[in-house]
Image (cartoon, rainbow, N blue to C red):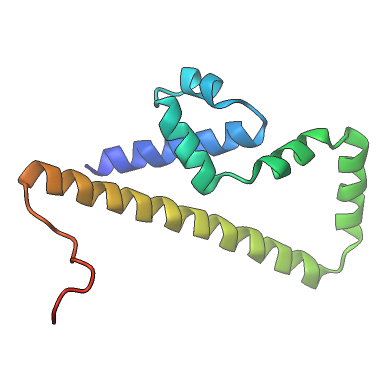
Length: 125
């Protein structure tokens, strides 16, 4: 079951990457052996919004050069905070992927063994 989770995380990160590059759901599903509806669900949950994707695609090379020059001019403390923010965002995405993987693991276990693992909402104590 561990290899399933690792493979799923690898696919998910690739899907998010391809979607952020502006690729459509159908085209991604042809590249990665995952149904189009699953790709759509992953993108809604984990990928940046469509508006962010389109605005990223519209940036020109000149704008990217200006951003690079601005980053070099920033003080070290701001750069370290930006690096920490980037690291924390990556950890958040990883945690969300793991949570979804654990949820799927429970679904598979409940279906396979025919027992309820999750607590009922409002269960008596």
